[in-house]
Amino acid sequence: MIRRSRLAGLLHLWPIVALVLLWDVWVLANGYTSIVAPRPWSVINDVVGNPDAYAIDFLWTLAISVGGLLLGMLLGTIAAVLISLWAPMSAVLTPAALIVRSVPVTVMIPIIARVFGYEVYTVLVVTVITSFFPAFVLGLSGMASAPASSRDLFVVFGSSRPASLWRLRLPYAVPNLLLALRITAPLAVLSAMLAEFLIGQQGLGYLFIVARSYMEIDRAWGTALVATMLSVFAFLAARFVERRISPRFT
Amino acid sequence: MTESATDTIQSGGSAATAAGSTAAVRPAPAEAIALRNVTMSFDLGRSKRMTALEDFNLSVAEGEFVALLGPSGCGKSTVLRLVTGLEQATSGEVLVEDKAPADLAKSHRLGVAFQEHALLPWSSVRENIALPFRLARRAVDWQRVDELIRLVGLVGFEKARPRQLSGGMKQRVAIARALVLSPDVLLLDEPFGALDAVTRRRMNGELARIWEEQHITTLLVTHDVEEAVLLADRVVVLTGRPGRVRHVQTVDMPRPRHADITRSAEFRAVVDHLTDLLDVDRKAE
Image (cartoon, rainbow over all chains, first blue to last red; front, side, top):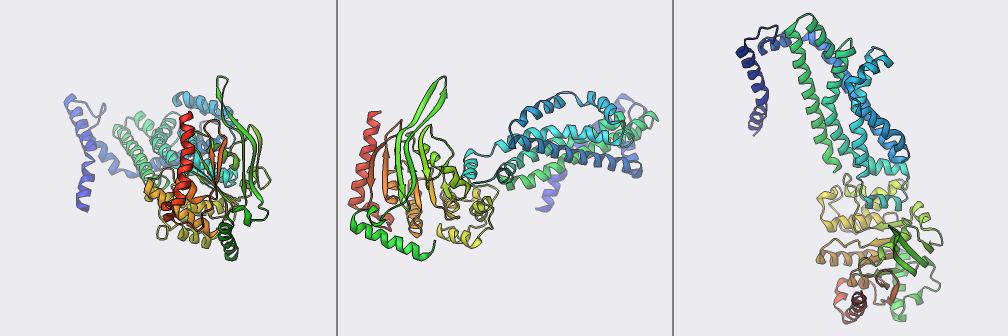
């Protein structure tokens, strides 16, 4: 039984295997030199052979992504809670949130960098902005999904507003917030790397740009490989958390 | 409530039967719920208004079980929502224990069970029943919670989550939750409305048994005639829209009433009479 499920798990990896093989065929068929496009084996070799060349930047991007993700989701949830406690707050927060959401993050990065400086926490700010909106919108709709009969019940039992929030609306928002986490996790990695690429002094985005400018093609492609793995890992971790916790609230 | 208090009321109940009227045994029954000349209309938009209740009067004495019976859409749930304080009357007066209804809710002395069980899906049976303690910011009396779990016959399901329970069990949890703070007033809005006929009948028997243990002032809204007659001291029959009192039927069959009472000739006669009254209403529509 266990062996079978492990086998099934390995079978799930087929797209990765197919991708690596296609990559190799593509390079060979076109006769690209390693300057244009390296073969997968040499890229994998560079990553596996020089883990410490990647480790610090990997951990850096990981920390910024996770930190920005959690902070952004926290702020989004707080904004949703404020609106839920006091409806007029919606007029203040919703337009601001929509504007931030509508402007492409790529365009915003130089402006944010101008405001906050070309510093580490600018990268964090970009990640926070990306992570804010899904938690805000899904958190709001989650809290609104508490059934009318339950809300009536809380009123009749003389519940205070904070108690209704804590014991009714927030728990109803948990599955939605976990969905926001799953949606946002890969986006947080993406925006952290993008910000690093444009303004950073550390992290995978920065490693990529440095490697490219020194024509270290294997290193540049290796960074892309590591970043992809980080992104996929972020998604899988978020999905794991969602699958674990969400059923407890439904 | 202490056991001796319950006993007194129960022996009072049988004396009432002898006297032929429930009101006779309570020398000066305090008025627990009063609706005086209540009119309730809703704005439907485009300058249309729907009048749910018109010039409605109802009085429920302390310790009395009153059932509001009427066709669906006659405004009986509106009466209940007025008494909970969830809705405000357009005109007229609604008093619960001589105060505004919301006062009772705020002081956590109101128990309710709606047609939707409204259980928290993430909480166990035990936690759901304990909820009113938490909302009242009181320490949970787990002994009381477990006593109610016994009373509604859910021993062994303490840790079950609502989705693991049948419809009837969920409603029993809702009833236990309504009773846990020993409320002054109990409001039931078709609590068994979503259940099948057999389960509903059994639940009514159980509710009658539970009510015998502690005569709480109760207002039950239902469209089920048998349910009303089995449980109530008085059945108030409403007309269709706008809701008005058509008839008040005193039910003085002895308590405790078991489910087999529903087969007696006396019971059937009352049920038939009330059903006819409801039917008149439907023909008129």
